Every structure is written in C-alpha cells, then in structure tokens.
Length: 421
Image: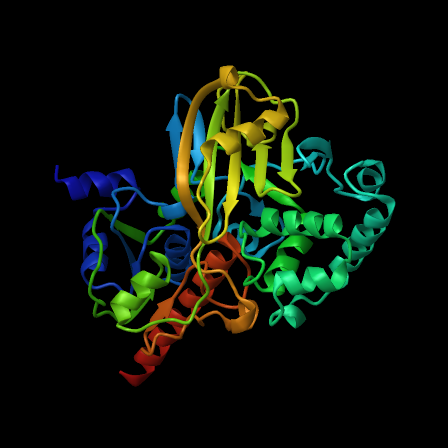
C-alpha cells in the first residue's frame, strides 16, 4: 500500500472512486489541516460540496495536536476551551463531542514570592492577603463593572491604558495584568488591544473554561472524519491552487502572504515557554498565577482525562514579551509554589518558545475589528481562516469563528459561480 493510502486510512478518508474524483476536482481546497482548516472543511462538507484538505505535516491538528508520553497527554501548551464561545457553538453544531471538565476558580496567587489566595470572587477577594483593603475595593469595583462593559468600545485602547484608567494602586494593576495574561496568553500590554482582554476576561470569569479529555487531539480526530471531508496529509501547497474556492488556513499570516504575494497589517505574535509535567502525585494547589511575575501553573488532570490512573498532568508556563528569554529553571521554581518538586516528575516536555497567537489584536489597528477579514485576499474565490483573522474571538475562538465565516463565503462563491455558468 502506498504511503498516501496508509495516511488516508489513518485519518479516516475514503479511497472509493467517488472520493478519488473529489480529490482531483473538488469544489473547495483547504490549505492547512489544523483546527481552522478542518473546521472550515467540515462546514463546507455539511453543505454537500466536495472539499479536500492539504496538510504539509504527516499528522493533523497544527497547534491543536496532542502527543502521548508515557501515558500522559500533552497539548501544544496548556489549552482551554471557553464555554459559551464561538468555538464551542460551532464545534457542537458540526457534531463534535466535547468532553472534559471545568476547573475550579479556587487557586493561588504568588505575590512577592509568597503564595496567597487568588481573588476569583467576592469571598476569596475578601479573604486574600495579597491585596490591601483599598486595593481590594479597586479590583472589586472593576470586576463588578467588567461584565457590563462593551468590549468593542475599547478597541483603540491598549491594555496598559485601560488598566491605568481603571485602578490607581500598583498592586491592583499587577493583579489585573495577571488576569489579562491568563486569559489572552499575551504579555504585550503596551500593544494588546483592551477589547480582546475584556472579551477574554468576561468569558473566563463568566461561564469559564473546559479542559478536554484526551487533549485537543480529541477535537482534531473527530473533525478529520466528518462525512465528506477528504484529507491529504504530508502534502503542502506552495502555489495558490486553481479551484472554484480556496481557503487558506495554515501557518498564520506568513503562509497566506507567500501564497498571495501580499502583506497583511497585523500585530506581532504572542509567545510563551511551557513545561509539561507528568507527576506521580497530585500538586498541593491545582491552579496558581503570578501577580507580579509572568507565570502560570495548572493541574489540568484535576478535571480532565490526561494522565494514567493515580498520576497527574500539569502545565507551567512563562509568558514572554518581545525580547524575553525563556527560563526553564524559573518555570520549575514557580511550579514549586504548588508543592511540585523534581522527585515528583515522572516525565516532562519543554516547549522552549511556543506561539499561542499568530498575531495579537493591537490598539493601533482597532483591536479585533481591525484584523484582516476572511475575504481580504484580493481574490473573489480565496478566503482566510486562522486565529489572526476576522473580528470575532481570540485564540481558538478566533480560528474556528473565522473558519466558519470563510467556509460560508466559499459556499457563497460557489453559488455565484453556478449562477454565472
């Protein structure tokens, strides 16, 4: 059997004559087999059109793929699905089964090197010793106003300016910056638009997030076998293909720029350094964020199936600004606040510098509304999808929302083409 046939069988693609015809002359070609590309393909296929996904890697998923090490499931950095967001809605409509658990908001906050109660609600805000009474009042007022804010009105304001206008004390500002880093994975408050920070914090402090059983690969595997989705792994595309409709959903703005011969006005990427830990015992604290230092720790296996029975999977990360150097020792030291020591580690994996976001929404570009539109390619039948595209959502929410929009635009282009012919 050829390697292509073996790969096709692995991802669930049919090799029937009908499938071969669809492969050679599809209605829609999708470039990229990550979360955005597979979602776009599923939406197209559900409309009854033929669609082929080309992925340059031999495995699917992109930044949503997971790996197994000694029975532990590691994502490409810590991943959380926002409840009630566009990603959950669209995936559910496609028929993807989302399983996992919602982590508790109770956790720790590291301030001046000591562990305190993280103020995640009125009770914990009153109990924590991390803030003075005046700082608690400031943070409490802002968090009370937060759900009522219209995020879109803050698109041209930086996170720095928004927080400086909202609170006066330095410690309260540190607290708010830590929540922004946690919900956006970005440490660029002088560039990041306040609208994305407000949107993410509203979701995180509202319906919360979900950690997925068996990692985000569980989503990828279900999307790859959606009826009518044909996948060609291990085959990248370097030249814009001739097809009735094309969706570019790979590699962030750089791949789209290379294929289209143009440039996009987007913000810089967000970077972080991650240490995945397979642990022999449960951490003393399941969730910790740094108030005055850019670190995060979470025991994802507290609510999701990611580790062998009796063992646990946790992730610790360092949020990186431009020019910051990853510090693996500092990341492990931060995990120590949760009671994790080197002797507890069964297996580990380090992602020296990962990219949670291909291009952050910036205030100078108007925030999320200023990102390139899905149809902003200069071609009537070529569309974009990814976490840097469209006015909706951030991270996976942006990738999946833009994928749905790109698929619908591609379907509309096919209708226009049929009307002409």
